Image 1 (cartoon, rainbow, N blue to C red):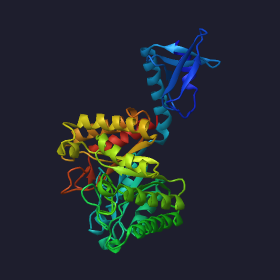
Image 2 (tube, helix red, strand yellow):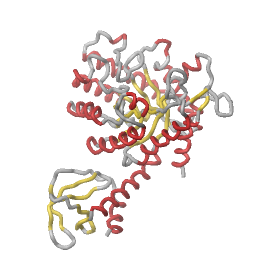
Image 3 (cartoon, rainbow, N blue to C red):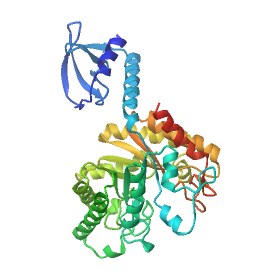
Image 4 (cartoon, rainbow, N blue to C red):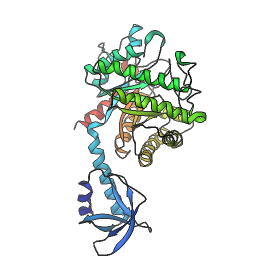
Length: 405
C-alpha cells in the first residue's frame, strides 16, 4: 500500500489545493465517502469528517490510509521537495559596508593573510548571492545609489545575483526607527507614495542599465511596525503602510518584472508579529512574493523571545512552515548572525540555522544571508576577527559543498 501510494505522490506536479470543498470519493472497494482536501500542493490527500485520510490509488479511486503510513508519505514528499529546491538554495551575505570600510583605509584578508576584496571572500566561502542596502540621501554617499552600483558590479563580476534592500530612509531603518528621509519630511500621503516609487525605480533602473542581476528586492527593512513613521506606522496607519508598500511593489515590477519582492520583519521565531503585518497587508490587497525573516538567537534571547538558540532555530522553521500554509508564500532568511567572540560555538549554531532553513522548513525557505560578516568592533555578531574570516564562515562553505554533491 505505502509503496504504490508513494509512486503516485512522487509523480505529482504542483497542484493548487482548494481546501474547504467537500466532494464524494469513490473508494477501491466500491464504497463512497465525503471528504475535503488537506495538505498543500506538493502533498495532498483527503480527510473525512471523522478524520480518516484517503489518497488516490488509480483510475480516480481512493484508498483509506493509516496515520502512520500518511506520515511516512508526507515525510517522503517533504524530502523530495527539499531535494528539488536545493539547486536554488541561496547562500549570501549583506556586505553593504564594504566601500566605507575601504575608504577608511582598512583591508580584509583571507586566512593566509593575503589582502582580498570582500565579495571575493564571500564567493570563496561558498556564497552565491549578495545583499545590498539602499539609503535615500546618505551622508558621505555610502549606501546611496552610486555606491550600491559599485558593489553590485563586483557581484556581477563573480556571477552573483543581488538582493536590493530599500530602507526608505537616509540612514538605518529597523524595528526601533523608521525615519522619513529629510527631503520627504513634509510630503502628504500621495506625495510620499510617489517619492517612494520614484526612488525605487531610479535605483533599479540604474542597476538594470548596468546589467546587474537583481533577483530580489526588499520593500523596507525589518518593517515589523511599518516604515516611514508616523505616516506608515503599522499600528496606527496599517492602510497607509499597505499602500506605501504596494507603491514599492509596483515600482519594482516596472523595472524588474521577474524580481521577487520581499517584505522583511525581524524576530523570525515570533509568529504573532508576522500575522499582524501580513494579515494587515492582505486585508488591504497589498502584494508580495517572498517573506524575509531575521534569525538572530542572540537578539531573541536579549528580547525575551526565546530562552536559548535552540528555541530560535526550532521556532523560525516552524513559523516558515506555518506561513506557507497560511499565506501560500515562501520565505528566506535575509539576515542572521552569531557571536563572533565564540567562534566555535557560533559555527555550530550557524550550521544549525542553515540546516534548519534547508531541511526543516518543508522546502519553503529559499536561502540564508549573513548580515555584515566583516563588521568588527562594537557589533557582536560579525564573523571576522582582525579583518579575517573566522571559523563561523566555514558553515557556509560546508553547506555549499554539500549542495554541490
